[in-house]
Image (cartoon, rainbow, N blue to C red; front, side, top):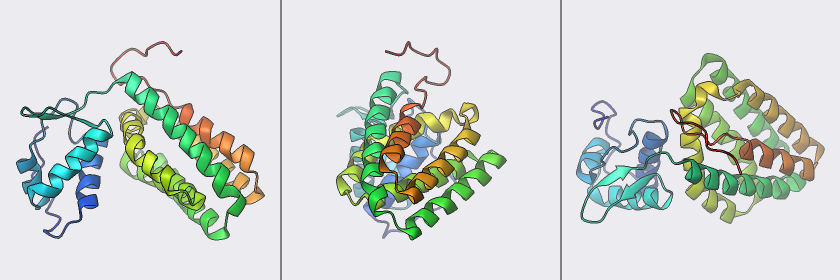
Length: 224
């Protein structure tokens, strides 16, 4: 897909993180397809920024496995790879398990309400089939628990590995048991309110570790 012409500029004062997030989301949602070449000059023009923050964002995207940078050659969107998705999923599941175990004992009412509102938005998006809104709301739901853990290292690890999982999940949105996810969120909220850290941690792990890793359009590889 060519660089979009109607996205609108984000302004010259755009922060580095904003450039990274804009490019990351464009890869996750399929705006930039697997195998597509990414040229920093084109991306900078699209976002209305200089090449420097774009180049920095591309380095971060390469570290997370979303793009493949070939020095002196081209930078392309990484192809979907089942092993890469599986490995990232395992790490992400472990991090969310740890986050729940740390967060629940110190859970506050405001965090619970934040999670509940996010799940309401998620349910509405699922009902309407809006993949963008559903995944955004799901991110907000789980991010509330991660933030409540008080461990910034969890956030750093998830920033690296979660986009790979989200990318696979986005492309499979129509086949995911999305309505069951609404119920799992409600169960998690109840466990947080009850202060059951062990059960919440187990549910967090299973929620992420149960995500299928088959790449759309390919046969599923045998699970170990």
